[in-house]
Image (cartoon, rainbow, N blue to C red; front, side):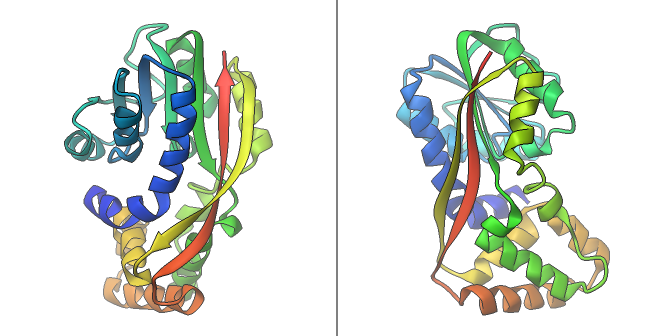
Length: 253
């Protein structure tokens, strides 16, 4: 799954937002950076290049992601870690960053409280989270394909998890509950560019947790064909460009 995620989804969906977070991180001039939910390291790589003097520690709950990420961004210290129980001392970092990971935290207030604990005085928490599903054209088309392939009980991973924390008011409230003050909140729409809609569909079906849901339901080749057909009908065969919207937060303890 991490290899498919890296090959098909990172360049199209995640790299544009990683470039935005990197620019915002550079402006803060951090010396010690902790990254949560680093995945295969697209943001990590950008940070290492843009802030070469900083010490970067990259973490993810998924050991397979840590293994692959450490080969993609070897300049960072990689470590498996649970964001709700960070294995780091108090005040150890100037900046904590997280790209599209907070949606996966079971207890976000607990995780944000841990972030506050490991931040040094004057430190910042910088992260993004996806907006509503209907504001991400690639994933609207993907979900339509899944619902066509499974008219009864389609996989609901994308509406409920990646786009399940899309109420910016709730995000701000959770930050406040964890002891943060929101310094900046931005709605950001960027364009993803995919060379092939078919490759993008394969990336979503094999490089994300929806893979397990499809496998449980069976008839994988037919599902893939149906999803590709629906996504192509909506987006074109490729190259295709489509808008994706996220919310970006910067918070201080």
